[in-house]
Image (cartoon, rainbow, N blue to C red; front, side):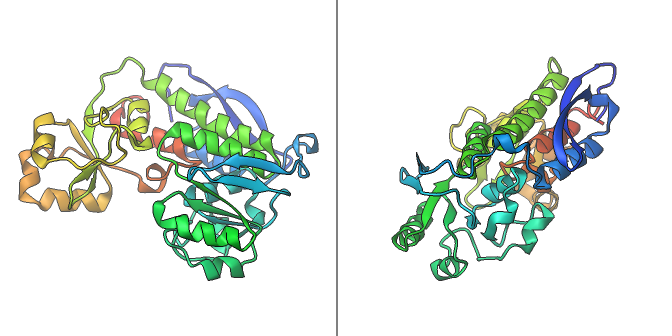
Length: 327
């Protein structure tokens, strides 16, 4: 990323002696891809900070998850089944990837996650497969479809927690919480702060520039769009745009097609396959943006998940919305 004439200062992570350290630098001194490659490699490397920050025996520990259930941990977990792609990414980033004994079919980042046993889908998971992995702690996605599975795992004497991350602030809180759970609060805070600082730098970079309006179609039938309750709408705002449905509190509300036409967004933000499909559908040509070919193609690898790469997602969106600033 270049900051043009704007000398934007950044604080980012570098690898020193196999561990993480904070360095002051200029955002313009390193291209965005190289910067984030360095950041993400460091965060997923699994190196531990100084031992004084670790508290592996700080137990018992109690908390409440997004189901409202009590999290009871009598010891720091060492065999974790993560059936939530966001928690899998966070655990690798805070140096606990080596404790994973199970993941979902959809957990593909970092690359090391592919070597963790695939326990199947994260929705209505196979309880027998989970128990066979012999975890001492299981993380679920907080969908109502997973309540029964979580209850059965707890009945087997295994601690569980369920989380749902729709907003950036929920990711921040979850990352810090997982740091405490695995006995490394410092590392959890470091990861959360790094993502937050990156988002702040992007917000500063595009401050004062015109804000193009966008719509983010999420599903065809029924027609769903990304609403203001989603982290993706937050990323659009941070990157210098405005989601025409940011006032709707639901993450993915159902809307009428005629309402999208009435709101007349400047751009359509979609993945590559959706762009071709929408462009071929006659009704979508009622939109000025579609007639003008104003599709902005999302990097779905970094934008579609509220996890460690949120900062990279904001950079990717800012590059689409403000290419004159973010190269």
